Length: 140
Image (cartoon, rainbow, N blue to C red):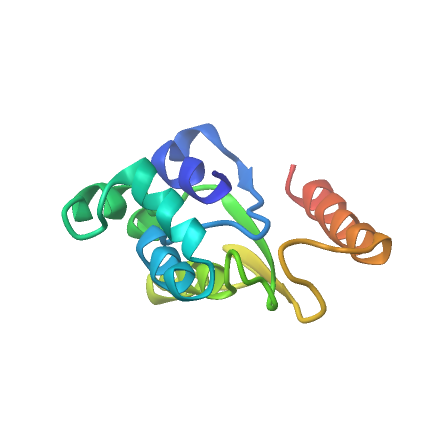
């Protein structure tokens, strides 16, 4: 929701911090249909068939609305996440870059090569929370 809320209601947020967030439902469905079919099934039960309900899937994907982002965003994602692959964060980052936004100035982006779907140990959690606390101190 950190991606979607920030682009659907851009005037409500000063910052947004997606952590292993979903930005492109269609891509996630395609990825999970191969790797974790139960998640693909879950999305189809919630949103209908991705072909028949393509507009709904597109509308509920934050990457579709990336141009509406006003908040400063700090994206964090593990590169080894099987449920929500790294392409979700990279796709949103790339959409911002394609609009001429600059990493470091308009948004911040961090990939963790030693994490999957969030930090699995206390050291990783501590690192993530320290990065987030630093980000909030600088941006709020």
